[in-house]
Length: 348
Image (cartoon, rainbow, N blue to C red; front, side):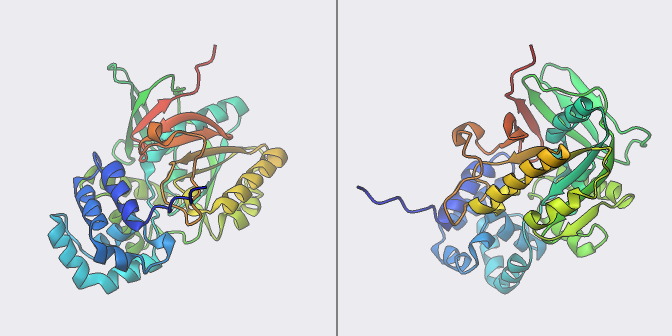
């Protein structure tokens, strides 16, 4: 019997990010990450951090938070040599809490049809909520483009143009787009370290997590922060498996409760994800809770070798997220909500 293959190492992680995730999104990050993968000395330094701190986006964002500029790898490498202690400090004290409001475009069809089926307004809980910006799907504008020239536009009622971000999403397949935005009357989130949209350092960190060339995302972030500041969400600090049930009990009983997450399950090991699924099942039985999962296949490599979404062929996803409603796959989404391909069969 041949021995089990070695699990992918840090260099493989950076090479995957540089050749699969970054191309088409950031030429700078693609160049930096592939070069890091071929830089044994830098890989050695990164391997001195805990496993969950070695991820490419965290290290790159930490460097940019400290002032690293977009440019050739040689200049970035010199920056790392000069600022390594500071980069390490940020990496060890922060986490990849990308709070991408654009993901609401991928979540909206599911949220709207839950609200329509229940005939009630929504109460939302996001696990891994960061600053809570994806808790406002009812406060943003949307443009869904199916590529045929038909664009479905949805706007928040009563909001003045320019006071909210407009989320643009390319669609394919029978996406169940709503005629209007669903009503959300209660919103809350859980995070190990919630970010405060009133704290300049936390806002600067959110901006550093945006990929270098994506200025449109930076502007969208600022607009979403302005929306959230008018009605800050309830954010609870702690482990999602410890806090979810008690937080769900605070949701108004007359609402349809939805627990959702994006790019979060990868930060739990297999046992933690199993415990979360058990908790969701308990809430579904006791409270009629719905569950929306928006996760990648191998967003982050686990120390135990487990994957995030074993049900889907990784080659089909190719850097996209798999969207599940109550455990059933319904769509594939761009990681920042930029696309949505519906794979669930249209109703007869």
